Image (cartoon, rainbow, N blue to C red; front, top):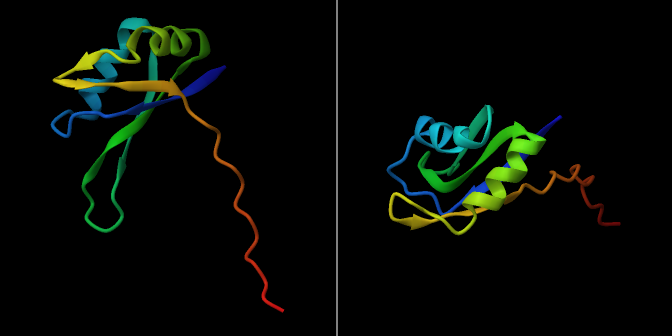
Length: 91
């Protein structure tokens, strides 16, 4: 089973491939997704890495608080996205 990891405080100069290589030390990386600003299209400095659950837990344990290209990473298990709430009705 795969698990999604939140990776924050990423340097703006890194690529998805850089992150894939960095995390692959702990196991196979299935997917890397950077979050982009809707307005400007620029990278927002965080993203998600999807890995096997065991590898993901090892990566979280090893990499949270570690320096990566001059920035201290925040790495933890990603919160599952909550289903969208229905629109509010004003009666």
